[in-house]
Amino acid sequence: MQRTVSASIDLALSGPVRLIYSVAVAQGAPISSESLKITVDGDAVEPTEIIDVHGTRLHSVYANGSTASLRYDAVVDGVADEPRVADTDEIVYLRPSRYCESDSLAPTAASEFSGLTGLNLLNAVIDWVNRQLTYVSGSSLPTDGAVRTMLARQGVCRDFAHLSVALLRSLNVPARLAAVYAPGLSPMEFHAVAEALVDGQWWAVDATQLAPRQSLLRVATGRDAADTAFLTNFGAGTTLTGLEVTAVVDRFELDNNQLLTQLR
Image 1: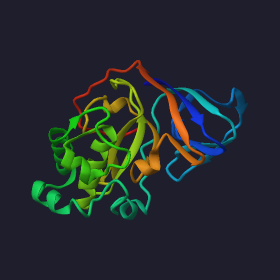
Image 2 (image 1 turned 90 degrees about the vertical axis):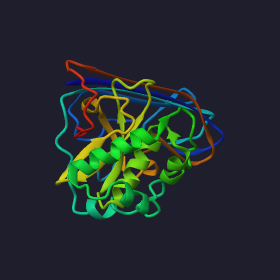
Image 3 (image 1 turned 120 degrees about the horizontal axis):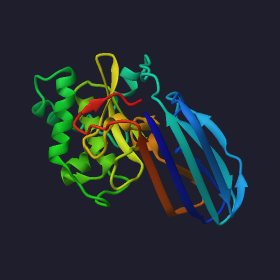
Image 4 (image 1 turned 30 degrees about the vertical axis):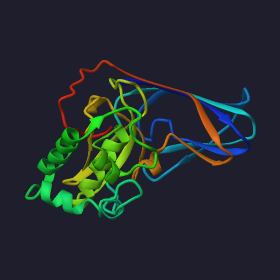
C-alpha cells in the first residue's frame, strides 16, 4: 500500500511565539520520500524535531514575525510494524483525561454495555457512538469533552473519538486518541480516531465511519486532543489563515465496512 499525503498551514502572528507542529508521519512508517518547509515572513527557518514515546514527530520553531507557513509532503510505501504495547499503557490509558471524562460516564457505560467483553464490547461501543451522534461540521467547541458531546448528540471526528475513548475507559478498556491522515475522507482534513487495547493489541476504531480504516496513516498518539493537536503555540496569539490537507492511497482496494483494524 502506497499513501501520498501533504499539509499546508498558514498563520498570522501577533508577536514572538513558539510554534509546535504535529503534521509529519509518525516514526516507524516506511517513508520513501518526505519534505518539510517552514517559513516566517517568507524566510525559511530550520525546525527542531522532537520525538515522543509513541513516535510522534513534533517540529518546533521560534517565530518572530507577522506570518508563518508550513508545507509538508510525504510518500509512505508499505505499513509500519504493529503498534507496541508498553507496560504503562494499561495505567495511562485507563485514567480520565481533559477531554475524556471516563469517570463521569461510568454509569452510562455500565448500563449500555453490561455483559460484553473483548472485541464484541469494542464493536458495540463504536456502533453505539455512531448511532447516537450526528457528524456536523463546526458544531462543537475546541473545549468540548466527551460529556458535552454526548449531551449535544453531534460533533466532528475528535468528538466521536473522545466519546469512544471515554466510554471504553469507563469499561476498563485502555483507550487513546490517534491523529491520522485519512485517504478517502470527505471533507479532507486531519482526522481523529480512537484506539483500544484488547487482547494485547491496539485496535483502531472510527465511530464516524467516514474513511477506510486500512488506509489510515498515524501522525500523533496521546490521551486525547490535548496531546495530538496539529499545532500548539506558546507566546503571542496566532490566527489560522489557511489549512489544506491531502491524502491519497494507491495500489490498494479499500473496504469501509470494517469496524476495527490496526493502525499501521
